[in-house]
Image (tube, rainbow, N blue to C red):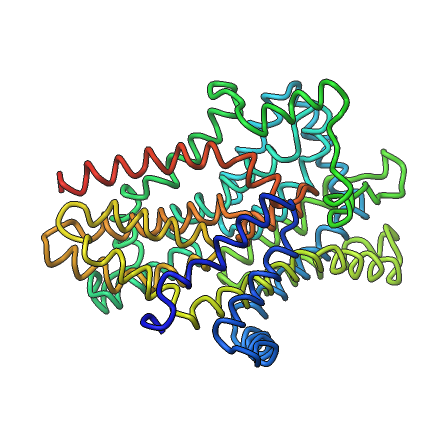
Length: 456
């Protein structure tokens, strides 16, 4: 593959990025670039290659799991909204939130508290706080970025999450951690070297309290809010229908219990079992048991709201599917191998951590799933780090940081897509709004890896 395609493996990505910038349309840009990838790989049989990849994506475990999780979360959020539980939580929070700054700090605190899973964070916080931040004229795009910065970055730094389990598995496969090593003790050694998650979480807080200035799109969105011209274009509005409060009862009928009990049970089951699917199902079951006997809603209404929430996730599911198919096509024409071949000759000595971070960050930013990027780069970077006497835990922290950067910056990464759905703004607007801050954190992180790589 490498001899056949070489630099051509990068061309579909460049075309996709160019199309997105020109058209502001994510799905159409990914679709065109995906067709180009399969034309390169399969020639006149590209339709067959494309459909085969769709079948393969569905046959593997990752996308069906995402499909299940997003539909269940969509259903739960819609049911909670219909019960008045989210309205009650908003009313409760509003007692303590009196300004734009406090609304963003409250959002940041929620993100730090809901550390157990980035799906819970990315999909749950937006619908909970967006009307509060709307009241204080915070652009939805900044809210989406704030949520994204405390999703995967926080989960990466907590040794009790699925992310930590995955990274520990990579560490064992790479020979850093023995078969009998404890996950908690080993993972804690990596956390001090997760520079990007630390920095982007801090950046999000400093932006919330006003220490960092609003630049780029955020500055424009704030100006538009003040001028009354803040709205979606026709093309953006067509793919992002504005969600409204669907609670039909009186304000006094909205009870905090209707929000708190299902969510507390969900988080509690997740902590106890580490099974997110089971946790959300328990949350839905708790909502059913709580609402139906009290006549908050009928069984028919419950399932109407359930399936309405599922329907809300269709757009994001299609984008995620196309992304998986696109990345599968890229791998088929040798994209990952080409990139690794290009950077392997310069992976030496103290430069290993910074080059690992930059390589993983760029590949993840270009849309390759962050789990896959870590699996691709770890077998190259970790043995080299051990060979040159560079701290292996620093190198692990470097590829974790790079993968987290991709999730918080790529406009069609799962994390950005979930946050954009939660705040009801197109993913491109959310990603571009936060990009200056992500790039700042990326550059500062690279400097830190360069310094510590040679120092350690």
